[in-house]
Image 1 (cartoon, helix red, strand yellow):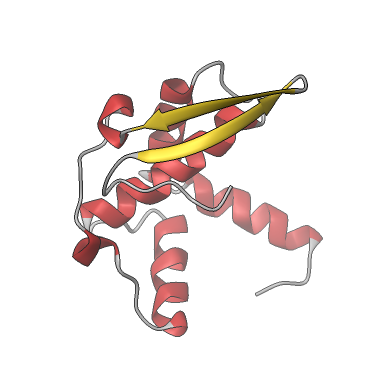
Image 2: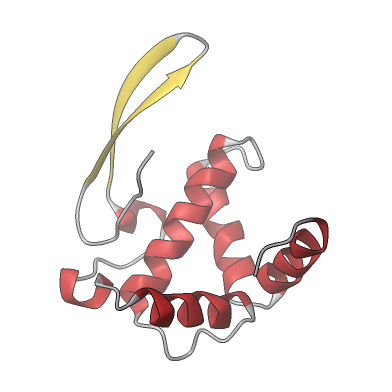
Length: 118
């Protein structure tokens, strides 16, 4: 998987028990709004690192809705794929809960305690 977006229809394939199935997904199907490419575009790597760090600390108020919801959509999709939720909608709801709090930052701090990354 590359990444899903909230700026249009997503197309993807799932491999499940040896069977490949084709799917489409519009972010509005899982509770997110339809965004624009301008709102999704990033900046320089250093700036993007600061934005991600702030997000993981629960400081999301200054993020554009499209960027924030795209992050939550991708996290929700991964939670669903790895079996943490029984539906994509539930995965997106859980991602929203973690993203809009500082729980993501607490998980990152715990993970960084096991690894030597900054």
